[in-house]
Image 1 (tube, rainbow, N blue to C red):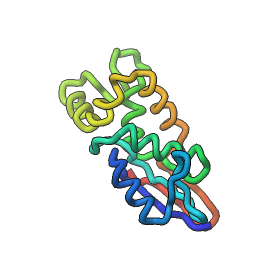
Image 2 (cartoon, one colour):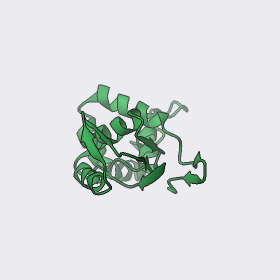
Image 3 (cartoon, helix red, strand yellow):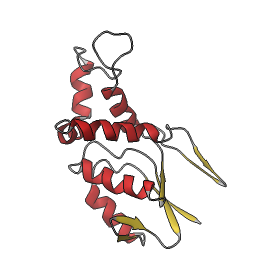
Image 4 (cartoon, rainbow, N blue to C red):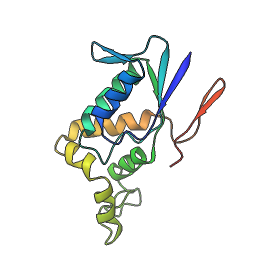
Length: 151
């Protein structure tokens, strides 16, 4: 079995689909598959591009369909931290929303994802939950291969 390593999609579903097609993947019933290869997504599915949800739908369907593996990138970690209340009970989140300097910077870095998903809170929480199922940015250990998002 061969692997195709894809990282840093950053919400650009059209480019992801073009790359998959160029690599010989074909779409059938909403799932991209290759006759012999599998994708290893190296994280950073989100932020920057204008197609956050579509990117995640493509990647998640491939992973859950068994045609891909994935590791968490720093942008997914940021999303998890943005959505997770600070356990110190200070009213903020692990990735601060309200800190005078960092709050605005954090939102700006994450704005594309938030802009598309905040109006859909149920789906937002579902996707954050999916991110939490992915291996952290530690090596994904396979026979003869380690895959990691370096952050």
